[in-house]
Amino acid sequence: MSQAALPELNQRIGDRLRQLRTAQGWSLDRLAGACGVSKAMLGQIERGESSPTVVTLWKIAAGLACSFSSLLGDLPEPAVQGEVRLLGEGVAVTTLLPYDGPLGCECLLVELPMGCEYRSVPHLAGVVEDILPLSAGVEIWLAGAWQPVAPGTALRFAADQPHGYRNVGPMPARFHNLIHYPSA
Image (cartoon, rainbow, N blue to C red; front, side, top):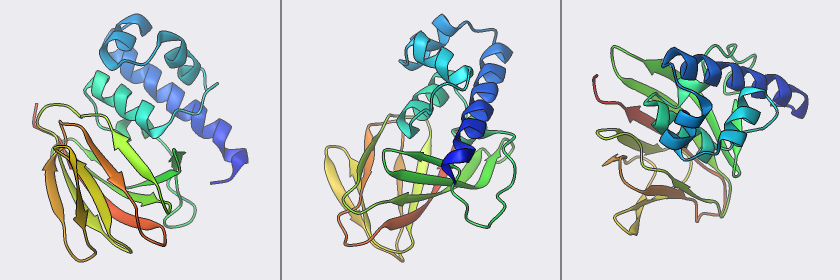
């Protein structure tokens, strides 16, 4: 994604956040309390004045009890297959299959640059993630330890606990991340 496209993306995310928040009848104060992101930051995101990080978007999604990709809702289809839609902490995330309510899941393509370590906030109770490395192994932080996951294998874990992703390899690591949400 070009730098020129970021203001448009920021505004789309801001508009979507406002839609989700107001649909629940929540004020910025209530959302700030639910997700642990300051009211000022939430206001900046809603106005398109801030580029939210992946961590911030996960916190907001958890606070709103919605999927990560729902915050990216109504984004246009990529002009080029595999186009990155979101960057943060050096982590690139592309939505491959947006959140599907009846199935309760979404599929993301995640790329971690060399040496990247990314800690995720715990998701909603009952959320499960599947990690399927594509180009290089990744390590997943679970229960206080890093667990290697090699290409051609998979790892399923409860994502409602502290967890993280790390690339210790000599090239970027890419993996599919299937996120399963409990039924309402």
